[in-house]
Image 1 (cartoon, helix red, strand yellow):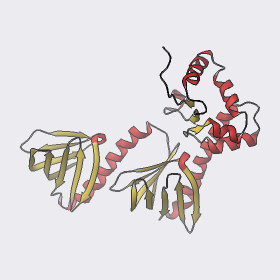
Image 2: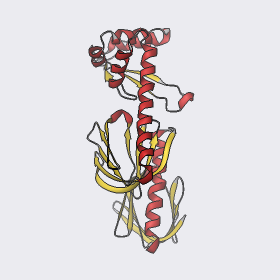
Image 3: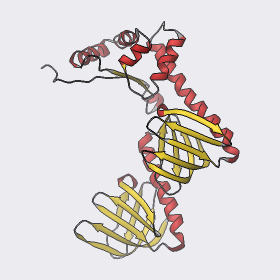
Image 4: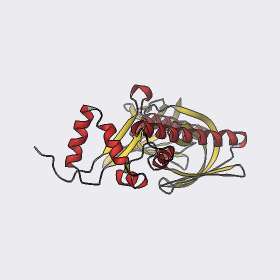
Amino acid sequence: MKFDCEYTLERGPKPAETGPAAADLLEENLTLSPKKRQALVIPWEEICSFSLAGYKAVLAFGQATLAISSLGYKFEDFARLAARLRNERLLKLDLAEEPLKKSMIEAELDYEGPAGKFSCHCELRIYETSLVALPDTADFVRLPFRFITEIREGDYTVEVAGGSGEAWRLTGLGRNYDYFRDSLRAETGKMDLFVQNALLAALPGASPLDIRALAALSREGRLVPLSELEKAVPGTAAGLEKRICSDKEDAGEYNFLKKISASGKTAFGIKKGLMGALSGDHYMFVFRVDKPAPA
């Protein structure tokens, strides 16, 4: 969609470019076509910051800053569409085509966490491993299920807490309240079952209660020190090692890394494949190496 505008392009010590232009908002980029200069194509993922103030949009990319103004009554349309297209592009790259489970759920979000503190209207989406909010005119925020520590409900409000201090307070869900609440609990429950089944495959003979205890620590995508798993369920480290060493090639790599790594500093995790059945799911071992590998 094209918007007539004025632009100012600043590039460090060089003189600023200014003048009339057309800004075309496309799926993968913003194309600026000045009337007296060469066109400029800016992929959405190259924009490191996007801010709106005083009926002006300011985009920072590389060593340059682009200000778009004089949009008139179309400013809000421009702001919403630009934010949506950039968010969609960044989500596509960030989540690597992760399956979308639920979408088109509108809500009011009060957010506090690493991304700051703000309130906004947004669209909620539930992906296979994450909860995502897309504000109308700001960057998306994402909370992977593995970091969710608590989900609270009451008076048509859903509050979600994260392990890094994130706090989401969701209101204005209307008739979608039950749908969203139940969907979020269902999808987080599926990830818990995925981890439990992966642990059952890796630790045949382990009791159901032991598997549940390990799954509470080793949530999908989270790396946990093997020492913590061993403390929760003695014998876990040996069982996982036996499983990984059942394949000759994996055994060779594992034993080499174990030999050169610091004792007691190995972490373990279970990861859902980024491309579903095409890439498969994974057991992850991360070794801390404090010295160069032997020649």
